[in-house]
Length: 354
Ligand code: PEP
Ligand code: MN
Image (tube, rainbow, N blue to C red):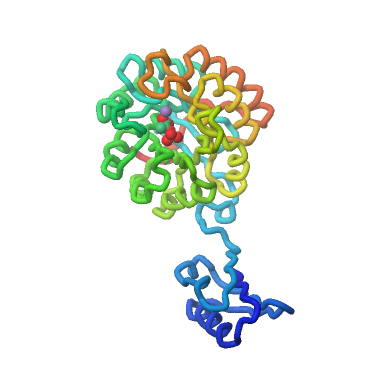
């Protein structure tokens, strides 16, 4: 960390700053320029976060050198983390193969769920998504079938072998959802629900962490750090579009967040083109862009009859359209040097145990 002092700082003020830093266990290095004096602080600056240095008389600015996150950073682990989901035969995300998670926004009933699962599996998806608890802007909208949906998800996994991804919205649901799901989704609206992040870090179940509607990349990484700080690192980050002034799309897909994240962290990064664009016809081009930008996977909403969907109808693909997107995705994956993921035999204990 570097402390830049104000012009005309007195020696007494400078000594006080130096003492505050040294009291916190740091070494200091003073550099006197023609106009400014700069104080270098040597040590792990995150330990200085509780010392309000910027408030000390004579301080102009405090410039951090280290990133505020630690365990999610590439500097912490150079090789990519590969997250394995499921048991026996499951899915891996974060390696060379592009993983596709697909399924309905919400689990609305048995028939539509089973049909969706068979369709997405046949088209090449390796994980099934389906919301049991839905975060909705209006309290009067369909908010999911809850526990009944969790039971259906368990049944459909047994029939198809597809691992299940479903959202958990509340710390009180974590145990229950983790008892049924193979991967826990933390939705955009909960990205900074710190109690929830810590709670999911405790249950040893892979986590799909979605970027908040107006969260910076750094805030997303810090949210992931909450989970890793509990000693669990099976976390996948998801860029799902952010709020901007643009109204032509539901959100603005921040494509550049993908290479930025891939550079900053060893965790896998996937893209959700469905919530980003908000329109079914945008899913294909946004998926191709995501793959070109280096995404490790995609999460796509598919519904047997989008016109009857109880949530996110406009952005849900029909089975035919999903097949089409998957077929057109292959050359983009190949151009990005990737294969398409297939169901993977997992070593015992590779993922989390259920
Ligand atoms: C969803 O995946 O259906 C969802 C609600 O996503 P997000 O949290 O990204 O809005
Ligand atoms: Mn949705």
